[in-house]
Image 1 (cartoon, rainbow, N blue to C red):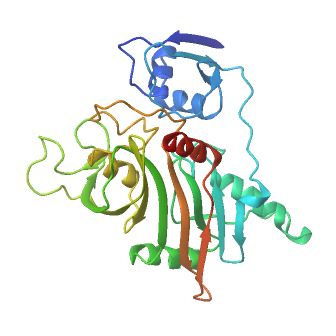
Image 2 (cartoon, rainbow, N blue to C red):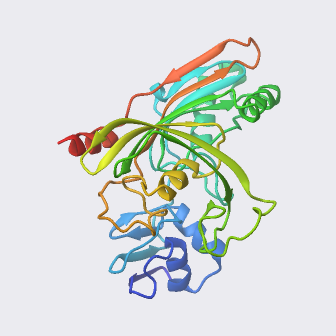
Length: 313
């Protein structure tokens, strides 16, 4: 079938885009995911490559297997904040995976950074495939600064810094409600009982000690500015678990503005935003070779600034 479409009904509402595609075409998960990530799935008329996107009732999902395959994006020249023989520091935009989630996505920040580094190589070195070693990641819709390693020695050194909690990571976020300055410490599990990540002890079925696969997670939250029914907050990480900031703020009753996943337990009116409003604004690491403390900061992106201005109004 070259093209198929459906209108999401109540029975499918809340499921992921990949699940809707799988049900629509009656295909294996692998093909449904591949169709999403290759740019052949349309949500309400627009290409949507976010296979984990939760769809709402009434949304129109179309699949066109004959549509042109999504081409590799190009990293802006000014997105590379620093590059040397050991590390490369880049600015990530929203809507871009840091690395392949299922192994078959080809347009990720890693891919774009590798391509950008290859273009920077001297002519005699053309054709080589520069190493881009992942030591940290940002969620697809999170913007901001992160570092990659350019060789295995640097990668191990940066990983050691992360384990020792000496990497400085400062985030800015817009969260619902009046957030207090406080620290959150919990044991995050991959499935809290309803298919979502979350902290052990937050559900009625959580009894006794956390399971062995639970990960200790610590987030320090500071109120920066009270807003209309929301707050601008600073988050500093001791640990870097997947979705950690989003989980801790949601469990405190203050999900991110624009949150689509960790929002089920929030009963107050939701503030609309194009994505979860989270931005990695500062990063500090020790250079793996010289030991020099490197510090980088990136300003808020336009969509964050616009949301902040509305909430100040």
